[in-house]
Amino acid sequence: MNSPASIVALKHVRKTYPAGLRKKNSALVDLSLSVFSGDVFGIVGTNGAGKSTALKILMGFVRPDKGSVTLAGYGPEDPASHAVVGYLPENPCLYGHLTLSDHFIYAGTLAGYSKKKIRERSLELLQRVDLEHAAKTPIRRFSKGMTQRAALAYAMFHRPEILILDEPMSGLDPLGRQLVVELIREYNREGHTVLFCSHILTDVERICNRIGIMHRGELVAEKSPAELREQEERLTPAGGADISPLESFFFRIVSKSP
Ligand SMILES: Nc1ncnc2c1ncn2[C@@H]1O[C@H](COP(=O)(O)OP(=O)(O)OP(=O)(O)O)[C@@H](O)[C@H]1O
Image 1 (cartoon, rainbow, N blue to C red):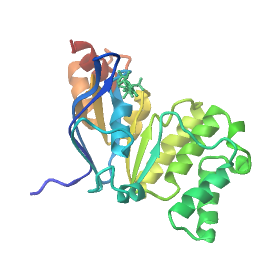
Image 2: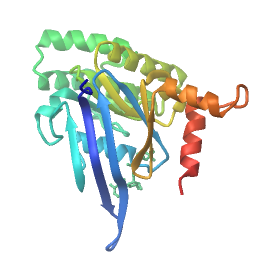
Image 3: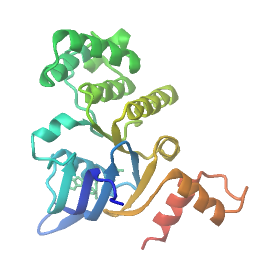
């Protein structure tokens, strides 16, 4: 039987950044990762593991030194890839003097939507991210959590096949986190693929069907939540641990690395 084709693929990707005179910092050493259509794939990793760099390479914002990258069959430099992907950066950069409605009009126009369709999608998303009351407020007056939810809605506006999110729960209160968790689940139920990175392991465990652990520029492990649970229950006798299977797996993997 043929194995399914991946919708997002990074193969043997290397990226170094300049770090002073004749020095280089290896952000990605040899990263290979495949995401399949319909996945909610979560990447977890230590600070500086290379998660954001990997996502920026997928978006074409950063060029790899080596390796290949595809998104729904397109290279990140191909303008056709922009139509299939939505991206939430680690630090959302919406226009402060514009409102969220303005951003939606911009996103909808770029996607070729009619005025009616823009209006309908805007209302739907404002309600989903609980920002109906702030549709006409300039973004600069938003709190951090409101900005995060607004940027997520903006990334999803054109219903991209693939949603790439860099720490979507960051800066959110428990209600906001739950809202984002539900939004990702719902978007995935509608048939879309989601790839995101997060430091909030409990959320990752709750919503992903596949989880990758990155450490020092590589993917060092990849499991489903069920595989993780089964493995950790075997290694940690019942009641012996007050941490979740992903936390226990993560600590073990990361601490055993030199
Ligand atoms: N623009 C840049 N110039 C130089 N070095 C960079 C740049 N961006 C990232 N790096 C370095 O590359 C490495 C990987 O960074 P990256 O932001 O991809 O990690 P991360 O896993 O997303 O980290 P975090 O969890 O802290 O957000 C780090 O050592 C970082 O200092």
